[in-house]
Image (tube, rainbow, N blue to C red; front, side):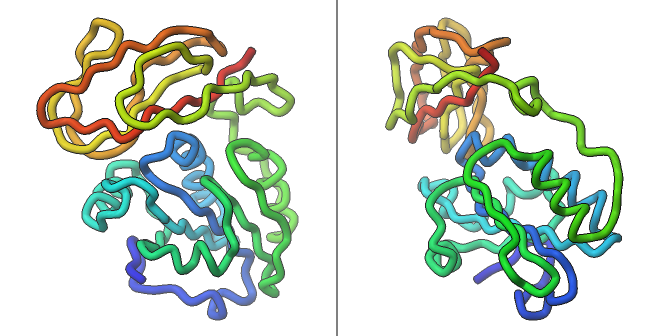
Length: 230
């Protein structure tokens, strides 16, 4: 097990403080969209006792390479501790089922709540404040679809490789490695690093068609879709 932003952490040494654990993958758009909340909670509540820990379990070739994981952590501005779990040992210990997955532990290290996928940010932050015994305004929603009660559309499932065809979503993203260019609906998009890069973004949930070509030096591992407000 390797760590970023800290030498090492042990769960039994965290007793006495709430611990928020999130499984993520820098090659998954849904993971990327939760990071601003994790980072904000780390910055807001660390002094009050909260420990935020990311567990990176990569499912794509670039997100299984330690150097690429560390580069992504720096590029994304993540300053809380991250455990790099290449063999998915912690994933299996938790019986985890997807990305992102959020687990909130009490100071006595009892599981207080868990949440799979995006959303429930206001609920999680209120639970954090309850466990810490603090009151404060909640982190403002990053996107319209994060507003409590917002209606979002059903997105097209992830597609393997360089997908061309119809989709429904608020945005389309490509999991890439290498460097070079992508051609997206007639325009060129530069690829400079491995990760999940935005291809098309809509104001709302939209039915559209994607035309995608990878240039020399770029591999597209998958195309993913994120929700938008209906």
